Length: 117
Image (cartoon, rainbow, N blue to C red; front, side, top):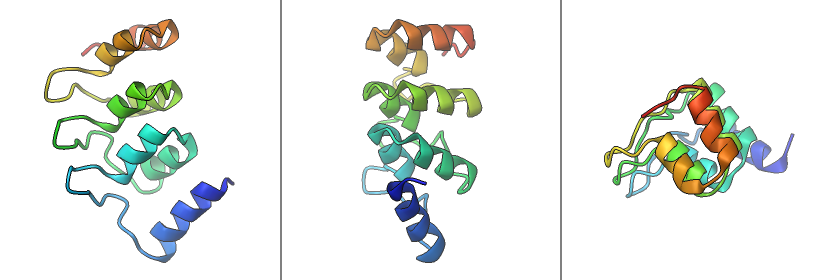
């Protein structure tokens, strides 16, 4: 198990930190981890802590939007496959960000899995 995951688990399970806490802009730990690119922590937050993949920051972005913006396509695919993520408040969905990324494999992933926003 990676040290980062052990640390997160310690704070949530032993220190009783809230995995769904928000900062002043609405960011949750899931937003930060999706943006940071650690799939094991994303999976832990989703599967064990039951974090909401549809939670939005004040600008309407979900964790999947940040994963795509930072080129963490494995996280974007995981969040979108297992937890249907919808467009932000500007009506930009994961497919829009996949197109903007100019990454053909990510674009094909969203087209093949019929996640059209």
